[in-house]
Image (cartoon, rainbow, N blue to C red; front, side, top):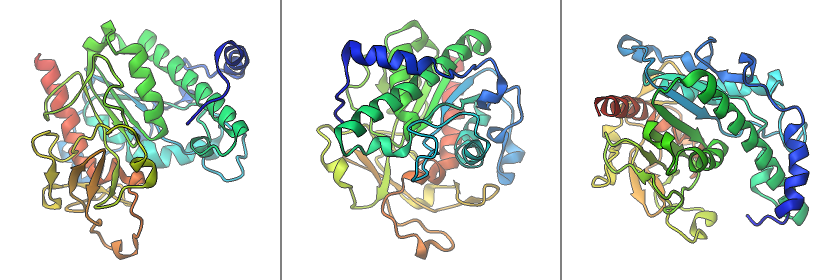
Length: 330
């Protein structure tokens, strides 16, 4: 994406926007998930409850993906953070099905933010490009403010996991570069799960990819598609994005069959389903066979973006706990 508005003119223009209705993250209602409130991130699938133990020695900062997708852009280029309909969509979707993965590894924090509309990823004119730039800047400014509040008020020096999906990863990449990469806070990084968006191999100067299941202070990333399919935008990338296999977590085991996937979460949150998909690292993306579950014959898409976390729910959950244990031992 090429942005037109740059330099001082943009800084002055955006500076005013950023202060307009700036969310106050000392107020709990501006958090989709927070240890001091009961929320969807506290949910545990029934089949996993017997093994659930609350861990409070580690914090997870989760950045949710785009849920502002209305075609008419009802609220403009950025969504409000206090709209109950939109927040219910966020809570019942990504907070329940994605953020909850990490409640066995630590305390989950997930801010609402003035997310950019989904169309910001697909500008078709110079005006669209300028508006997209502004929208992402405004959204990131909220994420940054929420993270600063998290550090100053709530974290108290605990180890940190960063987790994100889609637009959340767009912002998480930037957040990690600003706060962790080569900074003192990097020493507190357990792991980052930067999922659903490409991470360039040279994006970070000091944070490496995770090559083994229990490695810490590193990051994991993947984008999931049907085997033998890569969309045009992937083919046009001038780099090979980082890809982690979310079943093996091992650079030396790039292909894992579905028989080793013990738990996906589909539409029924309380039911883990075995053997839905496998995972194969293939030059910048993660491939899998067609998913296998009741009704999957109707599931014809080749882009599994929406299920990047759900397909590997139990594996990610267990891996986060494994890396926490490894980090705390060190």
